[in-house]
Image 1 (cartoon, rainbow, N blue to C red):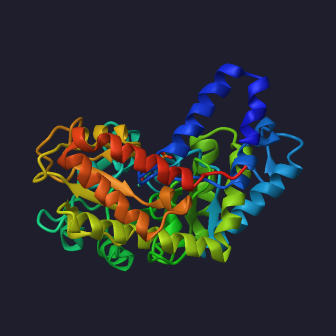
Image 2: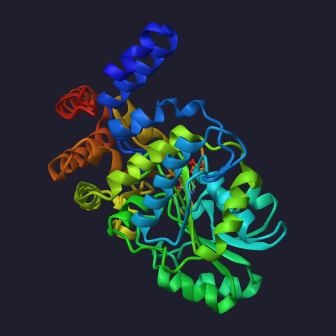
Image 3: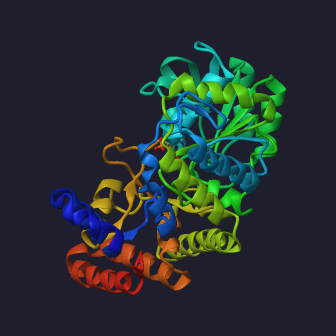
Length: 413
Ligand SMILES: *Cc1c(COP(=O)(O)O)cnc(C)c1O
């Protein structure tokens, strides 16, 4: 890329590594459900001179001089975020999804309060109360899981647990859950026990923005997200909430849990949110869902099992327990034929988390580069091929994958 090539004259060592990464992205089929390929507009903003600026505080109320232009940028980002999601209030400063969650907890509950979140093993996120994370250390975190037979959320069970532990806040949202979440039902559960409702829509935010998944915004007290997954923006976080919580959310982000905002990344978020307001974005998100559904059906047709039997969103979870291969081994084999996925524990996985019996597959990145239904059918066959006879098929599949990738450049210039 022209833009990357300029780096070469400044630092050859770093350029070489970045260039190798660009080539890897170009020549591999990216099926990691949390990744995407951003527009050049987003790249340019993220690489802009706004990285030079300190801007602690919020537009109009900064602790540094010279913030008049970055104020414009942050206001654009905030206004667009509100417009995209129909939200009353937006904070665009969180450096990441985990930071957005920490700030949301600090805004809504006190250390030692009881919170509920989906177990990591059922598809929840580390930052929803696991013992390895600050959310599980500073709050009394109680987990809920999915139904053991259907692998779906069981709202009656969540309510039963909530009645027992009386949480101040319940967190909904997941990193590996292939089905739609019923936010109206989540609200009812929260209301029955008098808990705040928090939704972390990190994975599905792009779908929500385009109306391809029900929005949590009308129901939840506070909504967090990443901006780099289905949303297709720079790596970062975002918080949406009711107007009444706006001030406490702002305080929880800065000075509560962060210092100076990354203004170049906020500019890139603004560019992405501008894209999200255009009709092409809706078409893109619809194609993500279409591709996921076609790929899920094709995997089933090729004899694989999927948790919950399919998908409503952008991702699916292969249940490999009857396929004679572990998640770790399939990840490794697919890597060897230039297809990137991640192994993923399935609920009550018989294998340790370093091995697993599952693979998580998502369609946001391949859809961004232009893959459609036909390519999904090819991917399903290739996955079948590496499971059945890796030695015999490796060379052929690797070549076919490379040919397909060459037809769909991730960047034009
Ligand atoms: C990815 C993810 C996050 C964390 O985002 P980071 O930017 O990596 O901190 C938080 N919550 C959920 C549900 C996620 O899937």
